[in-house]
Image (tube, rainbow, N blue to C red; front, side, top):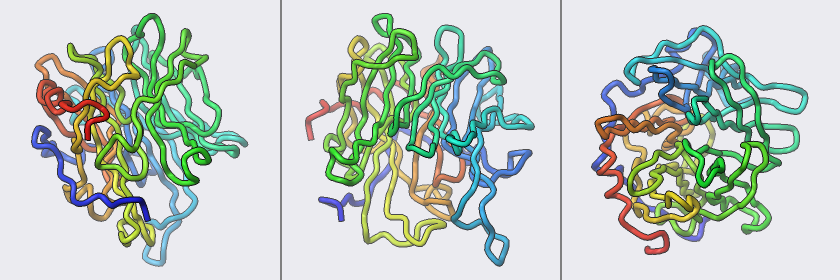
Length: 340
């Protein structure tokens, strides 16, 4: 059991779930698909662009239903004029496999200096790695860097800070954190988006009252007058939880938090909400999913009128959308990092 348990959690009143949720699912994909979620989203050249994780090829039971087992993953792409209704392209846009790499997944998009950068995770024969690739056409991708194991959940800032590329990430320091899940949010920067250093701790699990297991980055940050506004994922575990999805037992719950980082020193948390921004409550977040009770933001877009669109994977099964006004999100970040 964890050191302490987290009770009931509710979403903030400032967010509104879109009535079209889920906005993207396996039914929308023109090729083999089972789970469509954890997408990266951006606005580029007048269009909304979504790149989404697609898990498929699961073994079937005697009734023809998908079951837990070996499967494949690729990354698909779709375009939209409104960020809600999507034109899914006929083929995946990214599928990285070799003798060493079994799959690429969980993409995050950032527009920077007129190009689109995609952070992604890869499962390899020697651990989980994070990568960054760049494109201008979503057809040809230039891979700029790959981390050493074990690292993932990387997101890139949309501007250089003091002349350097900046990212948030979640390493997996298993042996230094008590031989269990205890993963935190870190910062690093780079002069060229290839070689990374200046590693700084941003936020620890112990700083988040609604987490007892792990935390990490979610959607890439957006710039506001008050600081870099960014979401993070927070996980709590309860060994008393039973079957919450396809598996015999799924004991974790994922929620989304929100915080403000300093504009000039982005590893410093200026303020954060001590309550979740999004907690699993809707049916498509809590029932009949691959892993129920999972919220994982992957894209956040600030519109000209102040509306913020936050795209998130729900129950590791579908892609959804909530909206809020940027001023309301900033007001939620009302507590210093260490204030309980």
